[in-house]
Length: 107
Image (cartoon, rainbow, N blue to C red; front, side):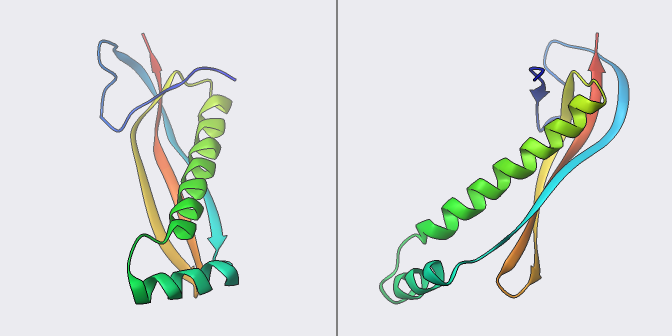
């Protein structure tokens, strides 16, 4: 695995972009678990962080990021700039996490 630079800015500090390779993305769709829903319902009554959902969304973000990096590596990129995440509900109880950015070559 190549050590790619991943940034949410248009440029990599101290480096010059020599070539834009194109859009790269990675996504995953995750569904809630009935056990998590029960715990979330209880937390909704007493308040506090719904840690089960926090963990699920964090794992989904990491998976989407990993898939985006794999796509950038397949293009032999040195970096991915302008990285963004987006989330959308696909159906009741399931959400898509999408990571995307521009794969580039650096001088």
